[in-house]
Length: 178
Image (cartoon, rainbow, N blue to C red; front, top):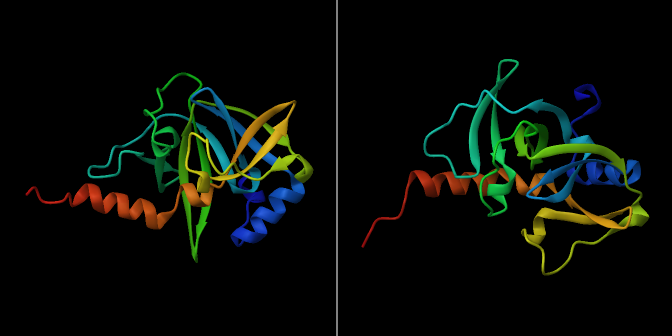
């Protein structure tokens, strides 16, 4: 699958995802979420994490992926919920994110991977302006599948290198007590 993933600007990736309509669906906290398939490199079994001190709470640690150091983000924690409980179905979805000119491979912890679904553009609604349990800028749209909504995530915004860097700085350099 990794041979199918190419580096491309965000706008082109969103357009390609919308045309292809293919999304990897997964469970997280009892809800169904999806990521455009073009951002997904592979899915691996959860394990082999090395914790890194002074990282934001949502960063579980790093893994060795064929010799490369890959940070692993707990998606539930990133959404402000309790950290994902590890079960035998817990997986790490390896994604490639684009932030400006920088590209980065990151692992995302999910409860369980479901399937790759085709969701036509006509079945995708804009993100809600309120009422979502996660930040609305993390939502690319709401896909309708079999009468239910699937939350389509904007993985590049969720794994914003600038925002995660600011979180890491806040953790490593806490404000002085008055």
